[in-house]
Amino acid sequence: MYKDVHKNKVIHNFVHNMLTTNICSENKQGVIPQPSSPNPVRTNSLLRRKAQHMLNNQEDERLTYTDEDWMRLAIAEAKKAEAIGEVPIGAIIVRGHEIVGRGYNLRESTLDSTAHAEMIAIREASGQLQAWRLLDCTLYVTLEPCPMCAGALVQSRVPRVVYGTRDPKAGCGGTLMNLLQEPRFNHRADVVEGVLQEECAELLTSFFRRLRNKS
View 1 (spheres, helix red, strand yellow):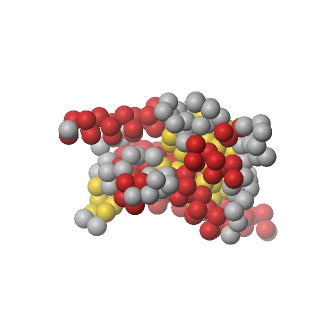
View 2 (cartoon, rainbow, N blue to C red):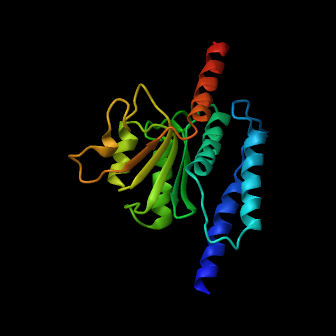
């Protein structure tokens, strides 16, 4: 009985996350269509098809959600940043099959140098779980963490970090240095890179191309 209830709750949480994620973000004026790749309509359709498949197959004991599935939700967060003129970086924190924290870049909007996607997601997850140790969690982020965010992930004891594309200017998940796996620290995270790399990189490339064209 408990097993069935727990399984249905897991399915419900994941399907809810997929079906309620807006690929087009909203502001006070209404929906802002996103011009960047990947195609938001196609991405949303893929998410909905997978969610519907899960609803139709609740009897299957093997509930498998891939890193690509979760990264698409991080990309959706990045698009919220893009919609308000921020550099499009998004992050989510997952425990089990439930998102416990979300964040997107708000550095310009808040005039806060610490308002990176990962930092916001960490704060939300800690509040949700009522714990500063984010054990049994995975952070998904579209861009490789910077020194600040990598340090915060170590301090938060996040055991697994998955990122989309490398950051050649500030990446501390293996590009410039690897703070996430520094052997002298008392905590190290498993790191997976390159998940939906092309989509994550294209978000940034398109954003900065549009900025250059405006100037």
